[in-house]
Every structure is written in structure tokens, then in C-alpha cells.
Amino acid sequence: MRPGYQLVKEQLFFRKELIERVQWFIRLRWTAVGAALLASGLAFVFELNVPVFPIILLILSIASYNTVFLFVWKHLKIAKPQDTGLFTLFTHIQITLDILALFLGIYLTGGIYSPVLIFVIFHIILAGILLSAVSCFIYGTLMLVAAAGLLFLQQAGMVPPSPIPLNGILFRIFHHSFFLPVHYITFAAAVLISAFLITSLKSSLRKKARQLLGISKELDISNAKLGALYEMVKQMGLCFDFQNLMDSATRNAAKIMGVKGCSIKLLDDQRKMLRFSSTYGLSDNYTAKGSINLEKSPINRKIVEGDWYTIGKIDKDDYFQFPEDIRKEGIASMVCLPLRMGKTVLGIFCVYSDVVHYFEPEDVKFFNLMAELTAIAMENLKTELNKAWFLKKAAHQLRSPLNAIYSMLEMIRKGYQGPIHPDQLETLTRCSKRLTILGELINDLLKLGLERTEEQRTRFHLVDVRSVLESVRQLHEGQASQKGINMVFRMDDDIPQIMADEKLLDDLFTNLLSNALKYTPPGGHVEVALAKEPENCIRFEVSDSGIGIPEEDFCRLFTEFFRAENAKAFAEEGTGLGLVIIKESLDLLRGAISVESKVGEGTRFKGMLKG
Image (cartoon, rainbow, N blue to C red; front, side, top):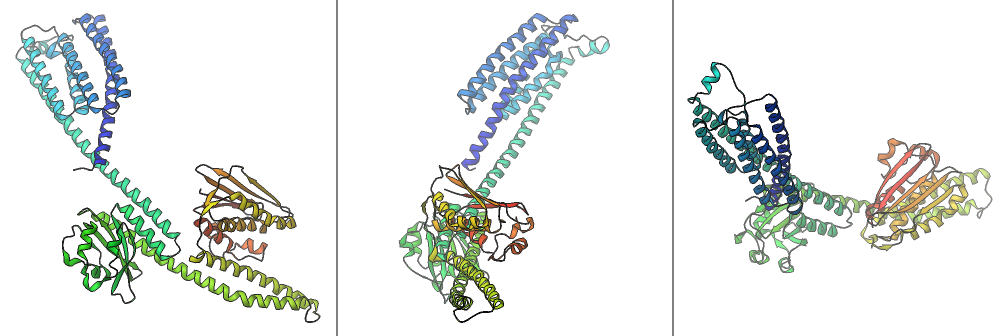
């Protein structure tokens, strides 16, 4: 059975086609009425042997019922736009009346020899397009019956003559009564062949349309899964410890796969036991048994050795250590994959369904991708935590001796230990300046190390962004005044509060404003803007008239310790970590930032904060 989604979409597709063709049918009838009136006028002018007035009366009748059809179609489109049955009935009525009118016209213009006879094929085509194949053949049969009646009347001499007289022997031969059955057989063959061809073609096209709808459905599902997978990876990228990362992975995997539950089981140090490290959708009773002994669980042992495993119907007790708990939990099928970090298997990633044979091969492939991305996220987090630990440890170890050296240099430079020669004073001043730069670097390293560790994880709450930016403004007014830089702040009055952390916002605006003031020459200007955006978002901009950034350096701006060459030449001090802190703060705030700059003309950083 086809999925309900596909059936609904298919019905909507063909319903739209029927409604559009019904309107087209009505418009086409107006064209036919006009052409028939023109032909009648020409017959009258050229004095052809045709009953002109009965034909005109027939044409006016067609125009009258077509006017009614137009009003009915407009009413149906407004009142019953989704009722396919009514539109189908409406089409039957139209074709039936058209066939009656057409055969009256054929009778009036020569019967089997009528030049109008060819238009019967047109209605066969219409019936084949708009209606079912059975309806098309029924109409074809009715037309053949009506043509047989005309044939009988023709032989009885009760049909008006053809309006196109032909002279000579051929006309007399083909109008002989012997050729009337030949005309009929030819007509019948044309009707039946047309019905067969149009219904076959329609069937083929509808089959291809169904295939396209199926492909469209699969693409929709794939796009939705990939979008959800992207959000899952993004969420895991914002996690600061393995537990949060694994919980995010199991929660999102269960929702994306549409299953009952999900779990991550990690191996112990001896690689003999598995323990549930993260679960979603599973009861406490199921996970309360504790660790799983690999010796008593052949499936888990096989997966740990590197194989993936899918079970369409769980019915064998010897597969699991606690089979009765699986049945009580309502698990009917599952897929389990090894969770690898590099070449090492850390544990097992499983999804559970309460439906037997739930997982298709495509689901297994997609879940395998999900497991690989989870393992990569865990590996990246381990690397980040090791880096953060090193940064924090190094910063702490360097800070104390650096402060001691700086204090001793200051004692010597200020003359507390005796007079100093001017050349020595200059050297000591340069040493103090270098130590100050080194101190800034250590502070930035320590800040990065703390922000990347669990102990400095943020607790989001409603924050007034205007007040945070106002405090940053007050902090930098003195620096701007000393350099003669005109610093302008433009903040909307209706800036909403957002879920954020004051420290992250302070790091963001402090580093943006410090960079703008640092790389703007005296007499320049710096402008900071804060504006409300739709959906409770906030747009911020920090622009300056400074030295600018070379375009080729844009791709490296947010990497650690990078400084553009013109920045090094303009200001000796600088750690190359300010923009890294900005980027990491925005990642935690779920914000975004972009840069526009031209060397010698200034720089503008534009960003967005979500509510």
C-alpha cells in the first residue's frame, strides 16, 4: 500500500489537472462556437447546400449551455474546490451534451460524409485526458452506436446532403451505398485506435507522475533529515562535556529517526563491560540492570568487534543478557552500530523501535552517518578540552613568574634600587612594554581556556543588551578621548531583552570596540549601532575609519593568533585572540557575524543576536 502522504499528494496533483482542463474545455468551446458561426456564414455566402438556420440554432444552443457551464465552473471552484467527484460529473455532462450537439451537426451536414465527423476524435481525446480509460471507451462505443444510426439514416436517404459537392466520377463512386459501410468501418477504427492510444499514453504519464511524486517525497524526507542532522551537529558543537554531547546525540537521533528510544553504551577500561552512558525514551527499569557483560551478550560483543547489527524482529532469548526486559520495554526491532573514535571502538550507539521490521536499509545508512558524526563530535570535544586544559594550565603557570618579573623591573625602572642611566631606562621601559603585551596574551589565553571548560559554562537568562553595551561604552570613552576619536553610539529605544549571558555579551562588545579604537588613527571615528529586528532579534554593527583589513585575510580573521600584516605594522601590541573570543562568544549566544572592510577606508563588523 502506498503511504498516505503520497496518495494525498497524488490526488492533489491530478485534481488540479482536472480543474484546469475543465476551464480550458469551456474556453475551447467558445472558440468552436466562433469557428462554426464563421463556417455557417461562409456556407450562406457561397450558397452551399446546407441547412444554415438549423445549424445556427444549434450553435446558439451550444453557446447557451456553455454560458451555463462557465457559471457552474466558477461556483464549483469557489464552493467546492477540492471535490473531484463534482468536477468529474461536470466533465461527463459537458462531453455528453457536446457529443449530442456534434452528432446533430453531423446529421445536418451530410452524415457519414460530413466534414464535421473528424471532430468526434477530439472528444475521444478529451475523455481520455480528463476521465478514466473506461469512460473513454464507453464514450467511444456510444459514438459508434450513434454513427451506426447515421449510417442507417444515410442508407434510407433521410440525411441532408454533404455541404461540399464534388464533381466527377470519384464523387459518384464514393457516394455509392456500397462505400457507406467502408466509411463507417474507417470511422470506427479511428475512434477505437484514438481511444486506445490516448488512454495508454495517459496511463504511462500518470505512472511516471506517480514515480516523480515518490521521488519528491523521498527528497522531502531526505532534506528534512539532513536539516535535522545539521541542527544536531550544531547543538553537539556547543556542548562542553561528554555527557551533554551524548544526551544531545541520543535525543536528536531518536527524534530524527522517529523511533521509541536511543542509547549510547560505553565500554569500561577493561573493555569487558558496557554501561548505559546516555539514553532517551527508555525507562529507568530498562537501564537499571547496570552494566552489560559482553560474554553474556553475543550481539553487543559482535558490535564492539566492529560490525553493525540490525534486528527486524526480536524473538530469540539467547541474543541478549536480559531478554525479558527488552520485551517489557516494548522494543520490537533495533539497529546498533559501533561508536568509533578513530580506529578505537568506544561503545555502541543504538536506536529502538516498537514496530517490527521498522528499519529500511536507507535508515541504517543514515543512522551510520549519524553515529560517525557523533563520534567525530566526541573526538573534537576531547581535543578542545585538552587544548582548554593546556591553555588554562599554561596561563596559570606563566602568570605568577611574569607578575614577579614585571614588579622587579618596575622597582628598578623607578629608581628604588639606585640611579639608572637614560639608556638603561629606555631598555627597561621597552622590557616593561613587552611584558605588558605578554600579560595581555596570557589573560586572553586564560579567558579562552575558562570559556571552553565546564566550570565556566554559561547560564542564560533575560539580559538587557543596551545596559551591557552602555557599560562597555563608559569603559572606552577615555581611550577614545585620548586618541581624539569621535565615538558615536546609536541604540533603538525598543531593544528587547534576550536570553543570553552578560559576560559573553561584554566579551563580544569589548573586543569589537577595542579593535575599532586600536586600529583607527587619531582624529578618526567609530560608530556602534544596536537595532531591533523581527522575531525578537537584535542587529549590531561596529564600524570605524581605521586601517582596514586586506580582503585576502578575511578567511583567517577568526583563527587563533592571526594578525594581518598592516595591523602588526600599525600597532605592536595585540594577541590575535580578540576575534577568536568574539566568534566563540557568538557561537554560545547562537549569533552570527560578518565583516566588510577595505584597506585604508575602515572596517564594519555586522552581526545578529537571536532572542
